[in-house]
Length: 634
Image (cartoon, rainbow, N blue to C red; front, side, top):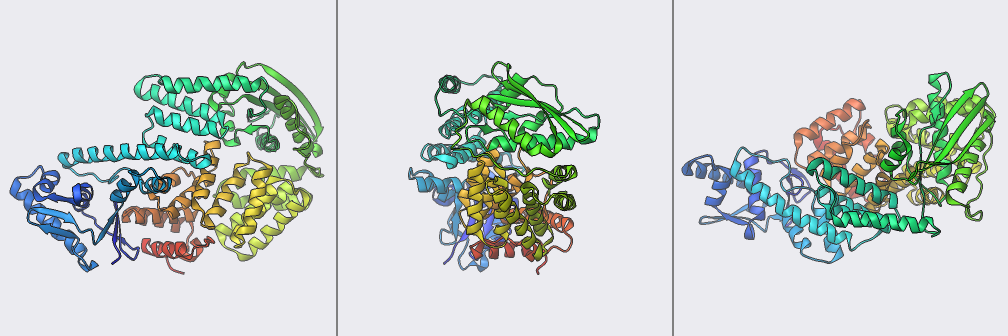
C-alpha cells in the first residue's frame, strides 16, 4: 500500500498516496501528529499528549480535548485503507503502515557519512520543524523550541559534513545553506569562505568575512574568533604572494557608474549604458574577475571614497570616470584606482565621434586589462570585431531599450526602440541579440507563436555579425529553449559562458535549460553562482531559482526566493501559489493565484505551463495543483 506523506520540516504538509495535498486545518491536530512523529518509536502516552497540548486545562478537560482530536484525525484518514493511529491502552502511535515521515527519513540519513545519504538529508531538511505553527500553550511552545533546536543542530552537522565532502559550485551552495541555518555561527562562515577560496573566488571569501564581522558586531557586539581571523590573514598573505608574480591570481575589478557630465540630466541613460558596455568588454578577459553591474552601481550618485567602496565590494581595483556628450562627439575620462592604497595607477581621456563608440569602449577595456593584468596573452584573447554604428540615433535607441528590458513590467516597451534602431543600422549584433531576448520575453508574457520564430531570426543575425559575442549565443539559446530544442540551446549557452565567464545572464539561462533537461541540482548550482557573484542581481535570477526549487520539492526555499522579486511575472505568482499549496497553506495559495489572474487577466493553466520539461510528470503535477489553487483550465 502506498503511504501518506507527512512532511514537517519547513512547515506542515500532508500528501495523499496519489500526490494530492491533504488539509488538516486544526493546529492542535497538526501539533499532535508532530509530537508523535519525533517521539521514541513514534508513540506517546495519553498523559504526555494532553499535558503538552492542553496544559492550561484541568486533567479531565485536557483528556476530553485529546479524545476529540484523536477522533478527528482518525476520521480524516478513514478512507486511507488503514487507521491513522494505533491505540493500545494508554499509548498512542502513528501507524507505520500509513505514514512516511520526513523527520524519520532525515534523522536516518543524517546518521550516515555516505555522500548520497548526506545529500538526501540536506534535501529533506526544508526548514525548522513545524515552521509557522504556534499555539497558545506555553508547555507545547517550550517543547517545540527544544525539538527545533535539536533538529537544527543535526542539520548543521549534516550540511557541514556534506560541504567538506563535495567540491565546486555544489560546495558553495551547501555552504551557503549551512550559514543560513545559523548566521551567527562562525564555523559555518569558515566553511563558506574555504569553499570560495577553493574555487579561486578570493573576493567573495573576503566579502563573506566582512559580512560575518559586521553581523557579529551588530548582533552580539563581538569580533570574529581566532579561526576566522587567521583564515582572513592567510588570504592577505596569499594575495601578496600572488601579486608578486604568481600567475594564478585573478584581479577583481569593479566598474563604477560613469558620471554624466552633460548639461542635460536626461542623458543619464547614455552614461549608464556606456558604463555597462565597458563592463561587458572587460568581462571578455579571463584574466579578470568582474563585479557585476548591479552591485557596483549601488554607489551611483553617492560621495564615498574609493578605499571604502573597494572594501565593501572586496575588489583589487576600481574603474571610475565621467562622460560628457556634446553634439556628435563624446569625451570619456577614466581612472583606474588601486584599492588597497587608493592611488590612481592609470588615467586617460578619449575624445571620439559617437559613430566610433563601440571601438572606444573596447579600447578603454583593453587599456585597463593590460594595466591590471600586466600583459594579455594575445593567443587567448582575440579582438572582437565591431561594426561601427553609422547612425547616432541607433545607439541612443539601443541604450534606452536596455533600460526597459531588465524588468518584467517594462520589457515589452523596449521592442519599438530596438525596431527603430535596427531600421537605422541593421548591422549591430548587440541590438539584434537584445531584440531576440525581448521577443522571447514577449512570447512568454503574451504567447504569440510567431514571436519565437522572429526572435530566433534576430538571434541568428547577431551570431552572423559577431559569432564570438557571448550575448549572441545567449540570445539564441534562450529562444531555442522555448522552441523545445534544449540540447541545441545548451550548446549555445555553454559557448556564451565560455566566451564571457563573468556574464551571469548566460549562466542563469543555462541553469534554466539544465532544469528543463531534468538536471535540477546543476541548475540550482548555476543560479547560486550567479547570485553569489552578483549579490544585488536581476530579479529574474530569483524567479528562475524559485522555479527550480519548486521542482525539487524545496518549497520554503522557493517561497523565500520568490520574496526577493521586486516585480512579478504572472507565472511567478502561479508557481508561488503551488508552493503554498504543497506546504498545506490553502489561504496563501489562493491569494497568490488571485495575484496571478490580476497580473494576467484570462490566464489559464495552459498559458502558465509553457515550460518544456522533459519529464512529463512535472507538468502533470503542476497542472493538478494549479487547478487546485483556482487557476482556470484551458
